[in-house]
Image (cartoon, rainbow, N blue to C red):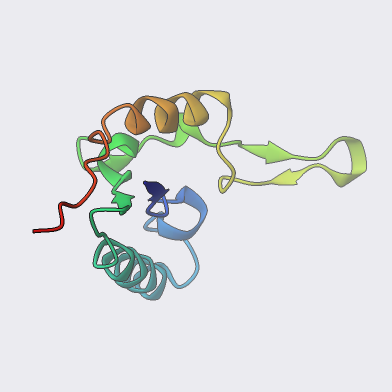
Length: 104
């Protein structure tokens, strides 16, 4: 069985004060809904949004605040940090075991 995840809620794009936040939220939710519709018995799509939300807010501590070093250091808030990767790993443990389809 193949497993993919939906796109986590990215703080940089979905924060209320983000540029184009409403459009970003619409595109993100539409994309994730389309992904979820692709689930089949041998192609599982795991919705990771609930793992990245707490009390209706994105858990920003699961994302890198900055990327790069010295003069190339810039704000990020899009890439998962080690804690965010741990969340994905825990979420993957919830995927149901593969059950091959039966041919009747």
